[in-house]
Amino acid sequence: MNVLLTVNAAWNALNFRRPVIKALLDQGHHVTILAPPDDATPALRAMGCRVVALDMDVQGVSPWQDARLASRLARHFATLKPDIILSYTVKNNIFGAVAAKRLGIPFLPNISGLGTGFLSGTALRIAVETLYRVAFRGLPILFFQNPDDRDLFVHRRLITPDQPRLLPGSGVDLNHFAPTPLLPGRDTVFLMISRLLRDKGVREYVAAARQLRSIRSDVRFQILGPVGARNRSALGSGDLAGWVDEGVIEHLGEHDDVRPFIAHADCVVLPSYREGAPRTLLEAASMARPLIATDVPGCRHVVDDGNTGLLCAPRDIDSLRHTMEAFANMPTNARVMMGGAGRNKMLCEYDQEIVVERYLTAISDLVPHLALPAPGPEIRLRA
Image (cartoon, helix red, strand yellow):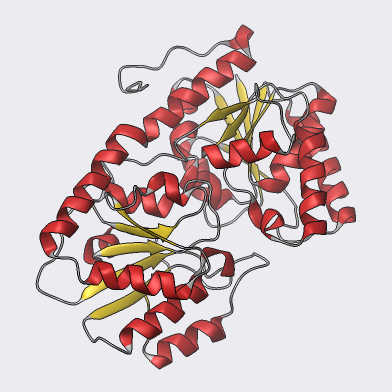
């Protein structure tokens, strides 16, 4: 079977879709990645994928550019002739669906987050909703990463109730992100793993850190992630340099392996405005780290408030500061119990093998004449 996967960055395919890609390759299928090329392209080819460059404006909102993207996707689909298309990220989902339906190719989108369009002004949100409604009409299966996003699409009549299926985010590799013990007898280290985006709550994190550091010296605040992301809500390197010079934040840079930094942290923080199912929280919980996140879709499903972590109000500096202070006052044994509860939640609900199994099932439903073999013994099915 020829499977085409389209996404707005090759990096996204490698880092978030690897388990599904590997499962398809292991079963002998041909996988093509259609995405803008980047540093992840060689690794995808080394896995056995064919990588085709997709020219697209990831950040722009120009109707002219988006119309050209739809035509470009249609040409790629017609040339590559896939048996099924797996799609991720907003523009690939919307314009890919339009092109695939025109060509009669089964199309399976993954709504991993709503993007800045849903967080923006009314006019842009209405335009994005209209595009979703048209693009997704008639698609048999749509994947969502949390029930809030699914229910929002159904409530606003962007889709019908029989279309959506749920995934536990992108899942997490429970063996790779193994639990590590907390380091006792030192300052409390808070870690935020994120691109520097306003929508991730970076400004709130810095402001709350500034307030907390002004009244106590036993807390440290770190950010791990790249500067200069291609996103309309990106913050600049000047902002970061100012926070570092002020002594509020330690910037750890960008690293392929986040595990050593999670292991050194006491708590991982994500004060995001809205998420699909944040991978950084899944990885941190799998390593038995307590979490602090905002009470918003995506985050609230990963964090069980008071059990695996703490929730705070979104876009609220005072609420975030009070929540981080409450954690800093928490004794070591309570932190250990919270981290252990998070690890257990990942074991039960967020194993990446669940994602693989649901994808294989959906593909078989959409392309029954090319039904995939049942998952092998390495795939542990869960209810």
